[in-house]
Length: 203
Ligand code: GAR
Image (cartoon, rainbow, N blue to C red; front, side, top):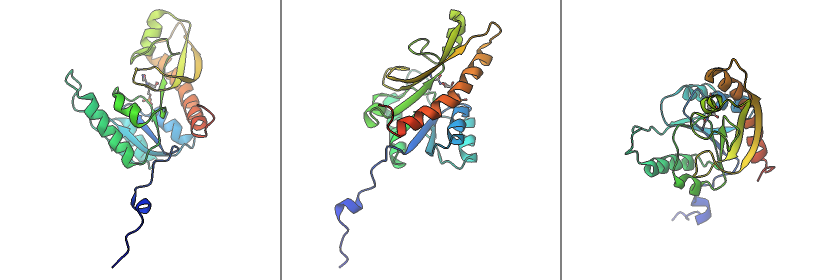
């Protein structure tokens, strides 16, 4: 008879806090900057077909598409969140960085990864929350906006701020030109802040 291995050896390895996943839905330029900065990304999760998938594949990073087929009022956010959490668990993820992820995740995400979900937002939070932060800053006529890296919570674009950088608004700015300048700052600030977070320098 073959002896069974002890229970501890049969259990799947626990997730490692430094095992990083990135959630994206857009062009993936922030994701690309993370990879270029040398962050080891274990998996990229997308919610729809998007250029970020290709950027991840080109960099040799596994991609999981947890496709969202319902963008209407009947969207079952909790069920979708559970699918994302399961996918992350399969990859033994310990820390999650959202980089332009287009789906608001439900409370289950923050129960599964307490204080381990980061987000980058193209405004100086708490100003201009939401998906149209750059347009809102232009419409408000502010002279300075910027970007914020924060710990994500159930409340959208809320949670403890880890880092911020200002970006000047120019009189000639359009939403696209201003967002591009903000993103060039995010591409530096986010990877730096994630690294500090993973190394335990930040709470
Ligand atoms: C970034 O500006 C990020 O802050 C924003 O999406 C962009 C992603 O750029 N996220 C949000 O607005 C979330 N509220 P990318 O697709 O080029 O990486």
